[in-house]
Amino acid sequence: MVAQAALADETHLRIALFHTGLGREGPGLLLRDITRNTDDVAAARDTLRHVDADIVALFDFDHDLDSLALDAFADGLYPHRFALPPNTGVPSGVDLDGDGREGGPGDALGWGRFRGAGGMALLSRFPLEAGSVQDWSALRWDDLPDARVPMLDGRVFPSQAARDVLPLASVGIWDVPIRIGAQTVTLHLSHATPPAFDGPEGRNRLRNADEIAFWVHRLNGSLAPAIRAPAVILCLCNADPARGDANREQVTALLTHPAIRDPRPTGLHPGLGRDDTATGNWPEGPGALRTDYILPTQDIEVTASGVYWPSQTSAHGIVWMDLRISDA
Image: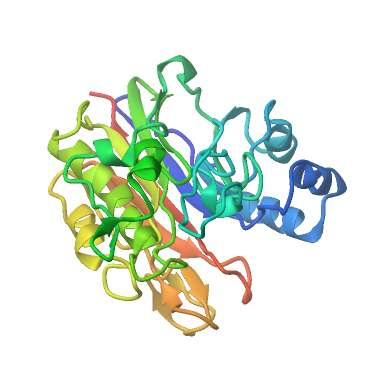
């Protein structure tokens, strides 16, 4: 563990963002496999031990009502855990994907075959102020300032009825305060939908851009409450500012915002054989992309950062960052 600094006026810690790839095809299967300690579960736990972060944001980790899978996975690793139900797999009651049918995984508030599929979670060695968490996951997409609206043949896609119920968050958006030394640092988490798997209306691409725009609005104060330092944004944005099909201007607007730092962590990329900023690798698809971000506010000093690839076949690296936070 990165120990707290000997100086009384500052704290050192390591924070990480980990797309686990542990999401399963049905409810209860992840808990079963954690209990069996299957190869991918053991590898994910080994990755956490290797990176040895004080705080880890987990993505693609199935949620269950009593957090049984999370508790079983984190046992012996982290004393403090937090998760909320995601939007994935929650029935909307309308046809959201425009295929003329209701009730499929594309008609859930966030794409998913079952409630809780591919959720988010936090693991921490520091106490979480769970009573002060703010959950933005129910914010309607249309209620975001300057929301993008998918259109097809001059009409709202798939319908205004769908827009009326569709939240911005495809998985979840949280503000989670954590007590670190004499400071409370707020962690801001989100997992944006991939900007793909849609049609000519570009619904997923637009939703991805607006899930990223949410953080720019919060930093600007155009969506209250504004983000206040000290804070860290942990966004699995599924968008690269230079490569891929996402709205590059929107992710660039976040990365270059004057209120935050972007140290551009690099790691030895398994496909490229050299250091690169890529955090995801899909050899049969878009290739190597930077999709996962840790963005501290300007008052937090970044002393080191990187991307660790668990194996040559990993679809995602784990992003880590060493921070120095003043207690003043």
